[in-house]
Amino acid sequence: MTLRTSPSRPSVGSPRQIAVSPIPAVRLQYLVEQIHALGPYPLSHLLAEIIGGASPLPRIERYARLSRERGHFIRASGGDQFPPRFFIVNGNDPNDLS
Image 1: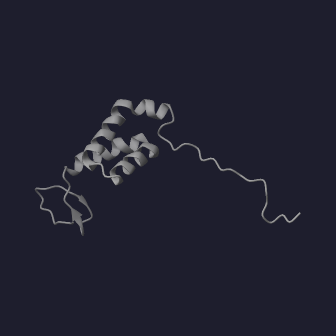
Image 2: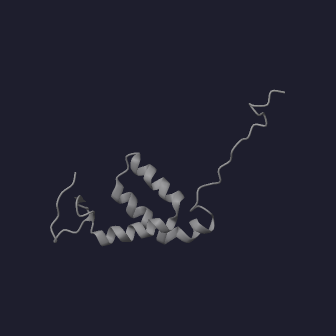
Image 3: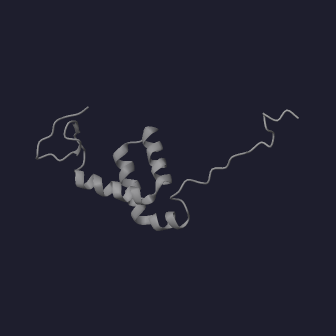
């Protein structure tokens, strides 16, 4: 649902379609910066939790706090990136008729 906002109520979005945010835009920007610093792998976990039905705002706040509290450890141990993808290659070529 989109609502028009007044200057007294800050929001995030485009001028044409503005959704009322439950938190001030500056706070949301801060949280986004904190979560972005965690890297793509933790971000995927956050999105999966929200898609799975978790309440968004408490999760976003928790992941931002996680960045401040444990962000260096997560990055140092490689937890900020997706694990390497492994492909199993079958040595049989389907085009090889011999």
